[in-house]
Length: 414
Picture 1 (tube, one colour):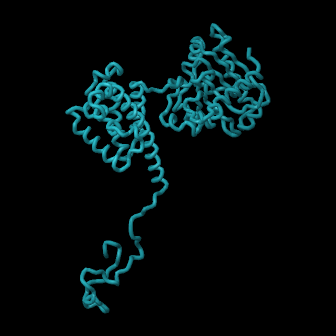
Picture 2 (cartoon, rainbow, N blue to C red):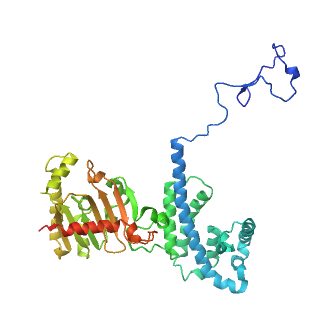
Picture 3 (cartoon, rainbow, N blue to C red):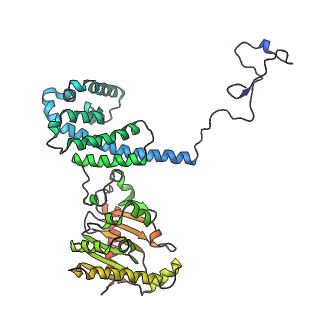
């Protein structure tokens, strides 16, 4: 048997029909033939599991690359802003070489050589990158900061914080640069370290709602793909796992909600927290489906539940909110109303009157309870919308207008 899966003739000279004497040395006999039971060569196809694995790797590596790219660009800009005015007046275009000094002579000369090769081969597509600083890696930029820390100290509070964040990024940088597998835990660590470092270097998110829903690096770059939709969850359980009720409602200055029973708020955010929120100045407007309306009976039939079950649940939620309102010094800041129309969606609009608003929206499905329906998380404002007309691209304003129309047609609960 040959190594290529070929069956070779035996070496017996007495074998009938053997013409080995006529075969030149070193050649394979023409009698060699492929084995019928074995295929030649490795299996090249990827199955579904393999494709899932490589896609997961690519998605994680892509997210990590974006964060690393942002950090490197920011660090490069900070180094240039601080050190260039010191060294450029004396050393001109060689100011980076001078700033590196004898301790950095080896790596800065390597960067100079790579720049020259890139020039000759036409790899410098942007004239703004035709400088030595653009060819320094993240560790080399860090070394420049460390060597000249007294120059950076007036702008950065804690040197240790910068170094710790860069240490955490080094693992991710090595993995991404070598196209190896990046775990979800390491990716999460890199994203947190990058966000912290950007904030330290004065380039944190400038969206007012960043406290409640931080702007993601990928969202910031490709936000126009999904208008103002920040996240999509297959059901409310997964929403609360990633975006707890405290993160949604805590610290709100305005809260408008419309739905059938508003369970996301009533059952996941305690009455005591609502009282403290309202006493701190939050204006609350809650719009429930009238438990005595025909729409509730139709919804019960859709869900296949016992008659009166849904209406009693809504009544209990309204009574609970009335008790919360009764504990307030200013009950007028906590309004409860009911409507009689067919419920089309549930929406929780937090700080919806400003550019820092966040909304959680669900459509009602015929055979699914609210807990089981898909959830959209929206961000108000136009900062992450790349389209020419932000109002045309966003969904937040649509649901806010629907709420206002429904509120105007509803009646208060005493």
